[in-house]
Length: 224
Image (tube, rainbow, N blue to C red; front, top):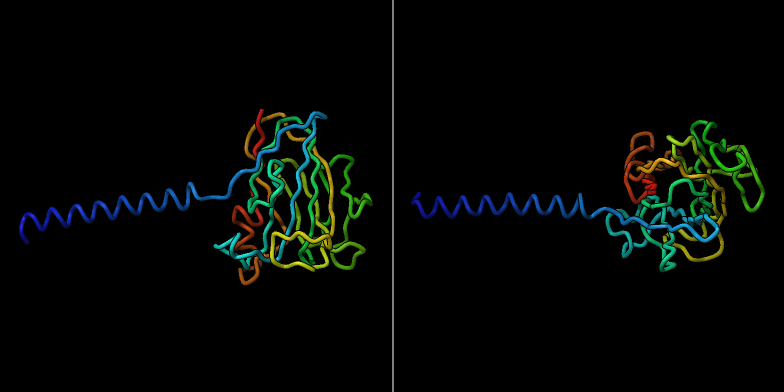
């Protein structure tokens, strides 16, 4: 092989490596779900609204539209964002509303039916305060949970009528789970996730969406 051919081959190889690095950085490190920013209202509280869906519109969620997923409503635009990352102020009351469009999935352990870490130690289901949800026979059935283990916060999300399976859903036929909690004074990233195994076709239901940002696990970024 001539010197010119070797130099050309080397340049092509280097460009291929550089291109691969750029793809990895852009696709995996910079291509993650966006963060929805919630600023404190004049009352010193923030309101976070989410919804759960059994699947998603491929135009909105092209990577895994068949995965179960959370969406977060942007306070700025009022639109539903496919993400599980949100930012809230430190030492602030957060009022959470979760609209449930997914059907019921029995919990593996009834500990996930217990409400903990919320204001008053309760969550409201259709306006009724409840401390414990029986995930097997009601009167409220569970579809998912919203839990931040480092804050001892865990709330079972009531199952919906499953009238809309392709999120983000906009009809009014859903369950409504509401609760409040105080964010910690210490800024940082606080991981949250669902603990109801809902990753169908994965071992024990704990793979896929259960461990992927933008679906059933996320971060609450607390800022000062």
